[in-house]
Amino acid sequence: MEESTAARNVKAELDQLLSPGMFFEGLPEGTLREIICHIVSRNHPANQVILLEHDWGGSVYFIIEGWVKIRTYNKQGKEVTLNILGSGEVFGEMSAMDEVPRSTDVITLIPTRICSIPSGDFLKVLEKEPLVGIRLSQLMAKRLRQVNRRLRLREADSTSRVADVLLFLAEGQGKPVEQGVDIPNLPHRELSSLSGLARETVTRVLAKLEKAELIKREHHTLHIPNLGALEDVLSTSSSLLE
Image 1: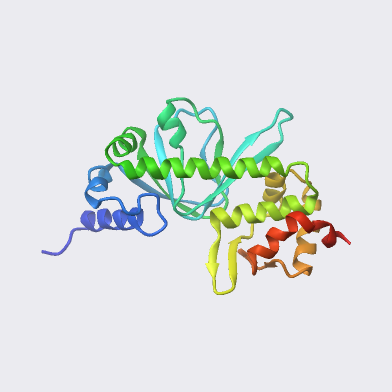
Image 2 (image 1 turned 90 degrees about the vertical axis):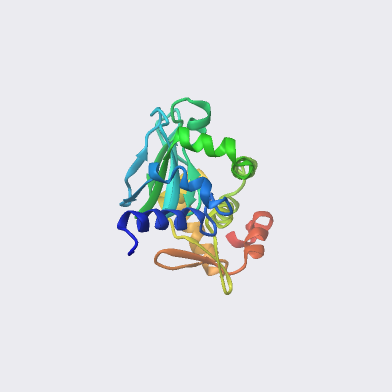
């Protein structure tokens, strides 16, 4: 008998959630089959708000394809980008576990496909599968390490701060290629918010990094040919400013 449309859709969802790089990679297929009927997948256009700060957390979200930014505001009302997340990453998990309102906004940067799972079902998987708990702990440790690194550099010069943001994106969203790593070529206003620098300063620093052949900007991607060389900028950035 020919496979029904519903069965094909279920298989497609499973294949996406279990594919390499996804949060659920390596989990028993049977575990996800128990909750697959509650999973909702949606395609979102760029600049669409997915979550708002202070909303109550009814779902946990998994990025299948695309990028989102995690945003909040400082006391002066200025937008602050806290993180950029891409395919395979999860958001909304903290509200699911703490049962408290959301603490940030989440907005798509480009057309993005996202799966959502009711918080209760996610917690059931978390209780049943130790691997999910381990992966969640690794995710939180990674994010904390990234925040600590950025805090250490907040008083550094502008070149170091921009280079650090690019390395931060490479760690989280970098795609290895034949020579180097490709990262999202974000608008300068997003890099400005991530680095805490004026947009004009970010534009100037990117031009210097490109002139030094440490980056190469294309339409949708920014190519870093040598991560080690860009790392060196954090301690030798003054030479690039001459």
